Image 1: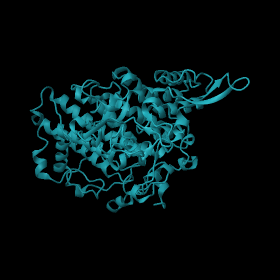
Image 2: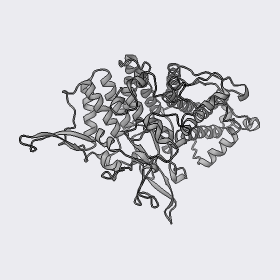
Image 3: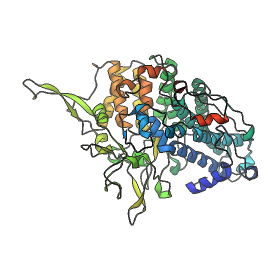
Length: 533
C-alpha cells in the first residue's frame, strides 16, 4: 500500500493524538482524546499515518533547539566549527559550559525525545491488540505489513533512546503505553547499561521484522529497514564497548565482536555502496527525480519538492554570500575555524628541494575531494561549509524565503566502512585499519605527493589518531564526531575543555533541565552538574 503524507497531514494527526498531553509531565503517555482514539487505529491507513507521524516527531526532536542533533554531536567538539556570539549563550557550549539558562531550558530538556518514544509505545501497544480485520484495506500480506510497522516503531524507539543515553547517560526507561496518562508512574533514571540492553533488544526484534530492501522506491533510506537497524546496532556495540566503563581504555571484547559480526553482515547484505564522487552532493540531498544516493542507510526526509525542506537547517547557519542565498550577507553565525583544517587537512611531507639537503614541511591537502566540495572562502577569516547548500526559494521570482532541501543523514555507507578500521584497531589488526584509512584517502583524491598515507610504521595509537581525522573529514557536521572522540579516547587531541579528570567524572554528559523535576520527584541531576545548576 503506497502512502505519501505531507507534513501538514502528519501535523493534523498530531493535533488529534498528541495535543492532549501535557508538556509538563515528562513521561506522559498516550492521548487523552478518547473519542478520537476509538475511531482511529482501525485501518492499515491509520497505522501508516501513525508511523509517518512517528518519523515526523523524530525529525522535530532532532532538529529542535538550534538543530540539537548537531549541537550535541558536533558543536561541543569545538574545533570543528565555531558559533559566533549573538546573546543566547549557544556559543558557550563550545567551552564545555552547559549552564547558560537558555541552553538548560532547551538543549538540557528531553521532553521531545519522550514524545517520540511515547508515539512508538502507542503504536506498539495498538498493534499488539489489533486483529487482521483492522487491516482489511491493506493490499497483500497483512502480517508482513504489521511486521513492517512494528519494526519501524521499535527502530525509532531504539534510535531515540540511543541518542538520549549518549547525551545524558542514565535516562528513565519507558517501554509501555499507559491508557491514562494521569496515573502513569513517575520513574527514576535507569542506568545507561540497562537502557543500552533495551536498545539492543529492540534492535534485534526490529531486524527480524524488517527486510533488507524496500517495496517502494520513495521509502528508501527515509524509512527504516534491516540495514538501518544493523547500522544502529553497530554503533551501539562500539559505544558500549568503550563507554560502559570510562575509567578503562580497554574495549569490551564481546561488544567489539558483536559490532564486527553485525557490520560484516550489513556490508555483505545491505546492498549499499559509495556515491560516485561526481555526484558528491547527492549523498546529502537524498533522492531527486532521477537519482537516489546508494550511500543512504537512514536519514530524515527534508525534501522541499513536497514543502518539507527546512528554513532552520544547520546548513543555512553556515551559508554566506549572494551566490549561496540571494539575500544573505558576508557573515554567517557558524563558520569553520583554522584549527579544523590544521587538524584534518594539514600534513607533513618531505621536500627534497628545501633548504640545503631537504626538509620536512607542512602543507594543506587542497586536492582532497572533501576539502574542495565542502568548503568555500577558505582563505578568509571565517571559512564557510557548503556541504548542505541545496537551496530552494519558496518565492523563486524574487529569490526570497530560502529553504534547504537536504536530508538529515543519520547513518550512511561511508560511516560503516570507516567503522571497520575502528573495530580492527580494537582487535589490534593494524593492517586492516591501514587499508581502510588509505582507501578513503585514495578514493577522495588526496594529494599523492603529500605525506598523508599511513603504513606499518604507525603504532596503534598513531593509527587511531589518523582514523579519527578521517572521520572528521568524511563525516563533517553529521552528528558523530564528539561521540567518536569519546569512544576512541581521542578527545584530548581535539577538545581542550574536556580534561581527563572531567571525562572520568562523566562531565561530557548534559545536565537535566531542573524544571523537569517539578513533575517527577524521583529524578536526580546528572552527577557532574550537581551544585552547578
